[in-house]
Length: 240
View 1: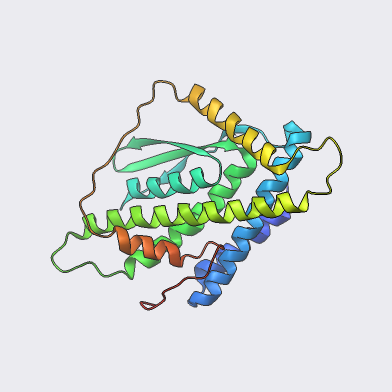
View 2: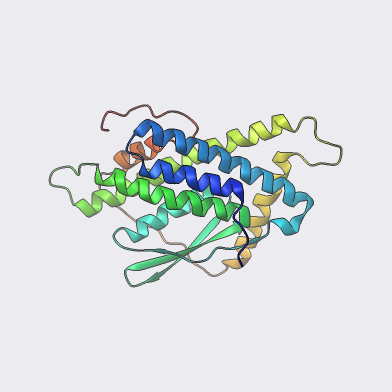
């Protein structure tokens, strides 16, 4: 028998499912904002618990995530940006037109990456399909740069949401019992441990770079902002 899902993760999953399925922009933003807020709180709670009980949240790899065409490598880019924003690392593998990736980091953070990335793939597919490609431009080139812009916007907004949650946790821990480490110190130590373990794991693996020629980066960036990851309301809804 499998263990029951954590109730907070189940609630986050439900909120993201609502965000994906609703056709109403405001409702989708509200569901996603609530999910990301819970996700940040979940991550910090697990970090603080594992500082006292290390066996509750250990560093390791996720199962391989398979990313299929079209735009498989661009989906890898999105996963990378989500993973980095949530305290994880990522490595990917190529097999023909298909890519697969694993996320490396603490288990609670890997869970958060998987949940959010799955939802963002759906949101990205819908938003990209609704974005008009400029006349005369390659559809593939435009959409590859669109994905890049979307991923960058998501990363920036996730970082803001994560930092906001950390500040709230720090403010709430002012009355912590003696001997309990601060949230900031615990999170900094976790980041260092992940970085050290990652360096050891990836020795000899070469990074790759891409040169993209399309003009979709700004359109993707705007759509990434409209995904509203909980740090502020979208500023421009004119194309919805």
